[in-house]
Length: 265
Image 1 (tube, one colour):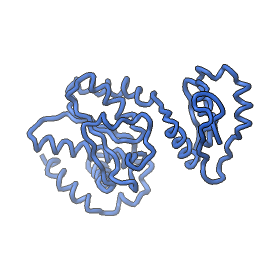
Image 2: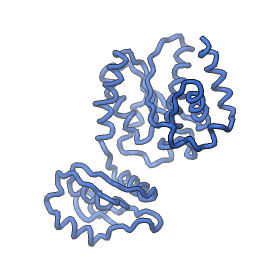
Image 3: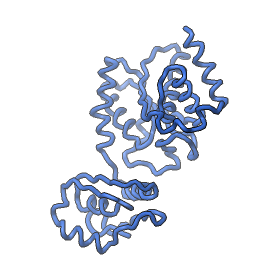
């Protein structure tokens, strides 16, 4: 399966594994785009039941301004992401939304007092966009990324960049530091926040809080005051049936030892 015309002409595309989807043939795509003609260039294009993403990627190759890929099959979504990454096609609207939105909200709500920004890496758009804008507002703000500590982890939606398909928008040089996060530490934080603060957040969000706490501990040890901001990127609703809520782990005791004395004050 290949791209027929345009910027990425003749490049090979990966097809989804299994039989859940049926990729559009090269001949059918060629016919479709012959009918569309010059209307593709500069258009906003929707690829429904996208499969491998071949139709949408063909549109990008022929000059479409923006393409939405709609697909629910996990194998197909994996193939679409792999094809976009192989062609180095990224969605700049992802990080730009955080550049224009999230960063300015943080600046306004902290009245410019923010000293540290901590964010998890998934698509990396939150970290990329927010960091770029915060650096413009105050170059002294330290921006710390967080990612799973191994390819095999329970931090849903986050990427272990050393082994994952890296999003084209990701720039590792933007981070002042990176924190590798163990899943067990995130489990412990999710449980502690739910039981002690009434915050039912997801495991990835709990990982972000854990990373922010780690930064806070380092700043306190150095005798520095800090205003640390992180993003709670998911809620607990899709994790409520997971066993970790009731299974005790060593990380629970470690976290409790850190936080209970502070809560008592």
